[in-house]
Length: 351
DNA sequence: CAGGCCTACGGTGTCTGCGA
DNA sequence: TCGCAGACACCGTAGGCCTG
Image (cartoon, rainbow, N blue to C red; front, side, top):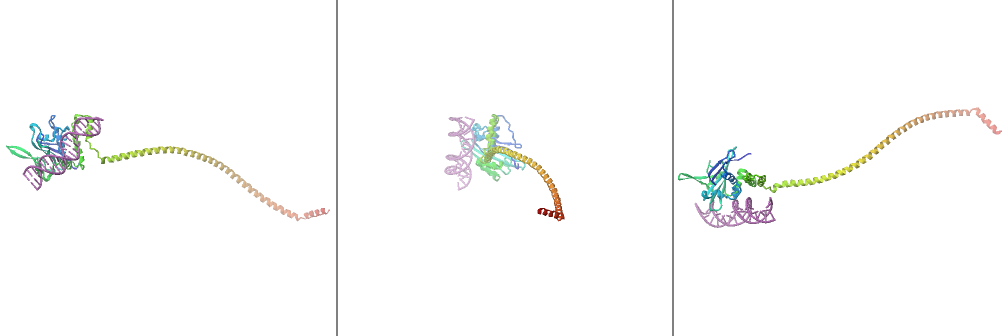
């Protein structure tokens, strides 16, 4: 953390049974020890929320959450210890050890018996000045040798703080001031919610009624209500999830239908393939058979060609022989025997 | 006459008691 | 057990009165 404030001192002046008290914390921690009802809770559990936001309503003051004791009681008390008029101061000093810086927040309260309401003012000291070190919240008057502490009025305090801090008169303004200087929440509601959580967690119910349901109720009550802006992204995501789920269901349905179709189509394709395969096998056998026949025919053609060649050769031989015989016939025709023959024939005819 | 004080009033938050 | 209405106290603001 760039700047971390640790509670360093807590002080009370004229509040409840305290005249002027100071609690010094060690490394942000404080242990209070005392008998039951000795005021431990009032001292710290009532005091700290009150100084953090200045809310004086009874249930904020009482660690048990009752409304029996109003702020007037803590200021003026009852019975013998009662005061008619009292000005109180409560403050918390924070330290940033790394930077050696101090920040003090506090409230002033003025109450008068028989006058309704309590005056309130809140302050922060931001210039490193420290209460009871650099200045006090009261004026000292010495009457008859005894020191009397007269708490500063609001104006006196404002004058003393001067430029080194701020004094406000409204509770809401004080709450914003403390948030600004001490916590730095960008959103004022967040600071309010932090204080609500603090109030819930201080509840003594935690130890008195130690049941899981009680703890659950306290923690649930302490949780801030989610704003619409914060819920919107979740709402959108849930909406998208619903849409996606619907889409998924639809796709799943489509996929199942597609599976059925694909199965049927597969069967159909297999049947087609089987049929085509049978045709191929049949054609293959047919082709083989024809090839064998072709070879046989080619063999016959070859032997026929040889016969043709041989026949042609023989034809040529016969033609030659024919021509030779025809030559011999021609020669013989011109022979005298033939003409004698012919004379003989003529004689026979004459005869 | 300016600033402080007081009072009234509307709004808000919390608690409590009552009835379903 | 839950929701609702009423009570209560406080906050913030406005306006009038008081006082140094």
